[in-house]
Amino acid sequence: MLQPVLPQKRVTLANGIELDVVDEGPRAAPALIFLHGFPESHRTWRHQIAHLSGRFRCIAPDQRGYRGSSKPAGVDAYTPDKLIGDVFLLADALGIDEFTVIGHDWGGAIAWGVAYTGQMNGRVPRAVIANAPHPVGFSRLVWLNRHQRQSSQYMRVFRDTANDQLIRDFGLVGMLAKGFEGRLETEDKMEPAERAQLLKDWEDRDAALAMINWYRASPLYVPEMDEPYEIPADRAPPALPPLTLPTLVIWALEDVALPPENLDGLEELVPNMTLVRVPDCGHFVPWEAPEAVNAALDAFLGNDA
Image 1 (cartoon, rainbow, N blue to C red):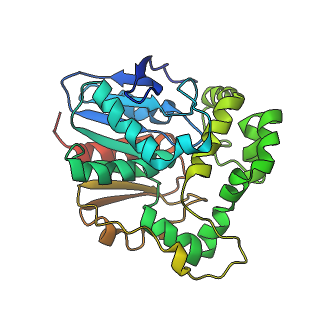
Image 2 (cartoon, rainbow, N blue to C red; image 1 turned 60 degrees about the vertical axis):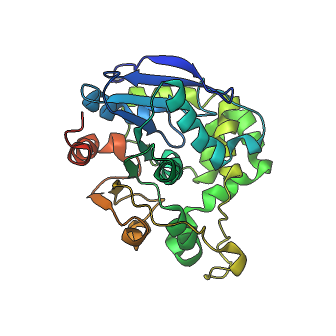
Image 3 (cartoon, one colour; image 1 turned 45 degrees about the horizontal axis):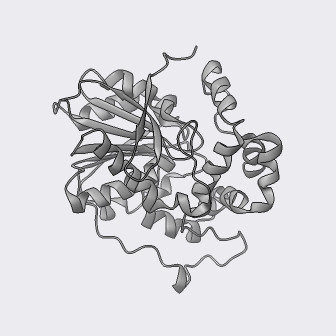
């Protein structure tokens, strides 16, 4: 069955972007900002919000380009700096100075950027990342690891504008079918009513193109399968300092797109890391294994509420 609908409100950011936002829990409680991934919505976090909103202020936007939130035209509107900026502007609009960022998939990629920015400006004391690789490690792995390179070829499909007719004809499902060769990891794992709602969301052609623009605006290069398995000098990973914030990394071990090798060496990049591995679980760990994720969050967040 469909979990209870989470009420949303419209929030206008200082940059003019409007986001539909869930804002549950005591206003004076510590704030958690949840960032969903592709191709989902705020409902990625339905189980975590239900679990934590009695103790924390739980904020979960439909991010730029998704569902009813603003869909600015052009690839340049979806560069990571703008997506990261939206998170801080959302906090500003809600009167929140300090918050813990929690992200999954693309939302996790943005959460890494929010954490690094928050480390500099003092606004993000902690971060939680679920099945989203560190930008340095992932930039290496797509060059050096055949499994990761093969699993990432869908990004090349998404970036090819010749495939946009698939969106015009079929909505997002057309692009997904080509990118993943008809194999979607959500099959037989999501509650039928939730899946039906997600499929309805994917029919919105404007949202579908905006979601794909996240991939097109990313600086990450995914090599073709026959390119050399070495990192060219002009494709060096980004130069980032260690992330020293307390950081919880939750990793589902049966993720077909992001193998566990993404964890190798992560402790050097994130020295204050708590790692929780979730066995027998695929990519969408927040709703595939909500009990494990909630337990990890409880242990990490502690008694701050």
